[in-house]
Image (cartoon, rainbow, N blue to C red; front, side, top):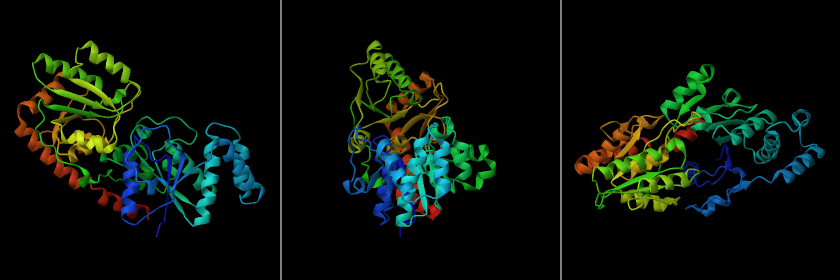
Length: 393
């Protein structure tokens, strides 16, 4: 029996495969919560979505239709007086649409007897869920991820009010759980860590036969991913007369800048930016790789990674990982056990770590095997989704 509904800002989203995997695993386990999405991600690249899941998504209407719907409900007496008063009092202040979205969703949840809603990210969806909880006898929870807790945007309903009102707050690393519990000690008992999960059986194990060795990097082309440092490391590898290829898969605002950097360092023959790829192509690329590199850093605004899904994917594919001790990364990448951690911004250390794996494929294989075992132990989506269901029930 479904006891909760999902609320996303957008779903399914190309860059948030962890959300889709969670919903898909629930479906595999015979659990099909109603899914609401504030936005339809029609402008995103296609992905390997199960259309049966996509067809379950209830997309909210645009602003004009949303306001009409809520006003009609008010005229028909479907809204308690305090809800109508709250809408009038809020007026057109910042984020006013969250209140109308809450009414729209809350009425439908009441109709189908759902008494709890779970959102992903401490952002638009969670703020809407907050108002659902204010307007209806429906509790809410949310999963917090990275920038939404490390560098939250300033809204009247901010992270503090969300944590204070939520029945449960889930986050994806021990690092983030500790961060939130220290910041909100009075609500520490509501904050729980559940790792994101992977369908491990989908991943083909790396064979380490690529000639020359292949460096794989995956992620949004944004500052906190540190790909400019990876490109600089590739230049050092070239100067050390190492033969290699490097593929940095993803899209983002720094794409043109990274292309220019590759050209300026004369790396066009060995470093490529092939753009964003669907999941099945990413899995194939990982299986042909020699080492996975994500030189994460803290960006100028304080944004940083928490649990990059791509590192979990690399470990599931049996690749050694070179990364940095940012956020929850050290919970996955254990120094000298599943990979190497280097200081953020230290291009020489980054280059040395990659070169060491190139020179000792036996070491690369051993680190990769331990990484695969750690992925199997911690990141089984079947186990982690069951933990989430137990928590929400």
